[in-house]
Amino acid sequence: MTDAGKAKGPGGELLGIGAAAARAGVSERALRYYQQIGLLTPCASTPGGMRRYSEDDLARVARIRQLQTLLGLNLDEIAVLLRNEDRLAEIREACRREHTTAADRRELCAESLRLQEELRDTVRAKRQAIDGFLADLDARITKTRDLLDQMTTPAGVMS
Figure 1: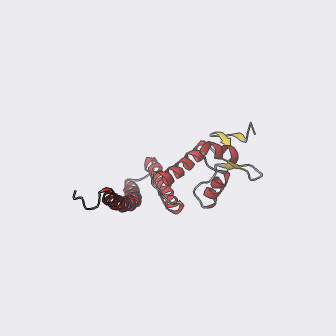
Figure 2: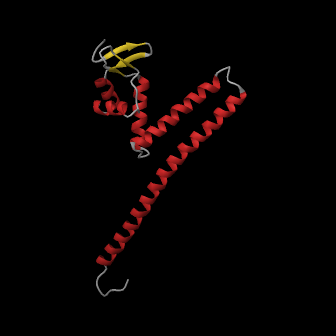
């Protein structure tokens, strides 16, 4: 163990939960919860069971936060999306392998297409919900502006 909850692993520096949470901009509780629900698996742990996080783990936390803030996805939706992204990475790796046959590559490509379409459908559904929310908000703004115009127009004066 080096300083402040850091250790060296085969892929570089590994962080304890406190340092990882601070670097990721989340709480330790959030990291534990992400692990509990299967969104994140720390790359290592000590013999005593203390979690250790890599740069890849921190990148995954950043992706989770991005999906929450940018797309407004909930954790269940994020879990599905991350599983699909993980599978897409596995498919890319399998297609690069020398021993993968042309038939296997076609099958993998078809699966990749299906997963990408599912991801697009998820994003499209979220966009439609946001568009609906914006349309409702625009209607309320118009109604409020009309009401304000009626209040500021002197009674009996035609405009």
